[in-house]
Structure formats: structure tokens, C-alpha cells
Length: 80
Image (cartoon, rainbow, N blue to C red; front, side):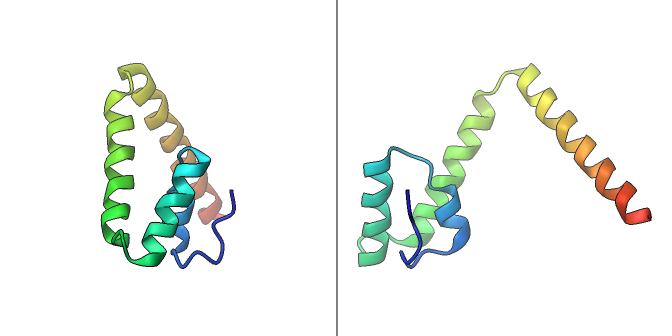
């Protein structure tokens, strides 16, 4: 799906993960001013939070462990 030229900032366009027809309708609604971009951004944030809260304990632990490894590798590269 192509969102360039839609008038949305990069973060909003990158977070728009939905069925192809629905994303295009939302992006068009934001462009036309029918849907406030801040409200759509808030919706995407709540959707991500909901997905995280539905994640199992093991899934959260794996995600946290991967984040910790990434931080450790960045700090290691920074020291070089």
C-alpha cells in the first residue's frame, strides 16, 4: 500500500496497519479533514497498547529480552 503524498507524517503512515481498503479510507478521511490526524494517531497508539496487553507473559518477556540485547549492542558499539 502506498501512502506517500497523502499529507500524513511518516510515523502515522508507517503505523497504519490495517486492511488495504480501510487504511486508504482513513488516510483519505484525514486528508479531507473529516478525521482529525491527532485522533487517528491516538487510535493507532491505543491499538498498539491493546496488542501489547493481550500478549502473553512469555511474549512480553521475549520482547523485553530482545530490547535489552539491542540496548546492550548499541552501548557496546558506542564505546568503540
